[in-house]
Image 1 (cartoon, rainbow, N blue to C red):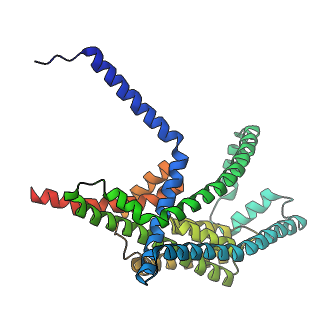
Image 2 (image 1 turned 60 degrees about the horizontal axis):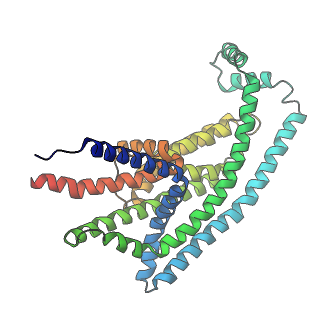
Image 3 (image 1 turned 90 degrees about the vertical axis):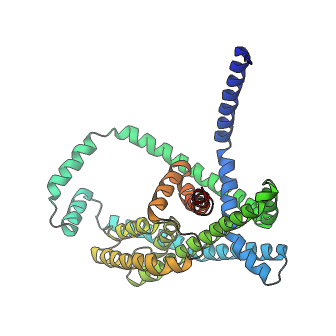
Length: 357
């Protein structure tokens, strides 16, 4: 009977725990870099189907990658060139509108103006009672502490914007590199699998990467459709700052399942702001987005996302919540294709193995 040395066992256990803690700490310290790498991989997989299509048109790999990257950059540059001046112009209009409202004395009695607006929009609401609750809540606040927090938040927001631009540049460079070297990266990963199981692993890997790629393309397409239609419709009904609201509609549409609904609510509430919109405009916008969400869910989305793996709605919600809690908005976006990949493995590996027993 072999007797283990207690000291050696305890030492190995301590070293194992220490190594685990060191690994966790390293991951936490490198989470920003890992986030950049993950984002770049996610985007490169989204561009890979386009590159593959160009290769099938007899273009060499380097030319297909170059053409894809140049086309994507040109599209985004064109969008920014068209949208930024409009947004700047509409922000100027917003400042002018606020100044006009101030000159007319709208802000001389802001409490009375808000109460009159509430009575006009919600006639069944007991405004005096609700306002009493608001005054009691405001009296309980520490205004000085809130002001300090707001000032600190503004500084943090400015720093986050600067860091965001730097991070976007890093992600762009990594995306170009990963897009150009995707076949080599896949080949290197496939070589790690034993030869007896390599063919099956390659098949699953190609299915997963194709599904992620089609998902990225489909989600961006849905966002573009919602943004363009929103810009046209909001301009027709005279909504305030339609270009800005269309950009909001585009970015929120990138969030699966709940993004379009959230963006629509923000747009409708913006149309309710006194002096900028009107209850009629907000009602028309609400009806439009209710109809659009039904068309998107039952007509547009199934056609566009048909080549991506189908993920049940409950799994989408759980994955988006988990990804958002871990990595914020990007985590919510990436979580859906990750869940789709797990479903592919579950359906094509786990279930067949269980059926063979």
